[in-house]
Length: 108
Image (cartoon, rainbow, N blue to C red; front, side):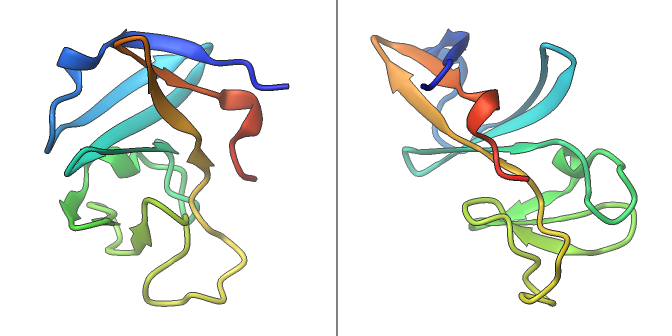
């Protein structure tokens, strides 16, 4: 069963936003890409550094520390799609005007 956690009003997450927050001790970055809400655990699988500080181009975020690039929708490494170290994705939604994530359902 999903356990949705409210992050704030939808107005705090307008189109084009990239916002990092910590939820129950887990760093998460939320993206609004042309109305599509996506979220990842804000930790680069390569070295554990804050991936959310990287540059977002389309649905690809590039780690500002080592240059690894990840698809924020699928979690896959763009340069090495068969890599066993994808970024963890977190289900995100808008419900009753509030942005919510489900940490229990995030990918491992």
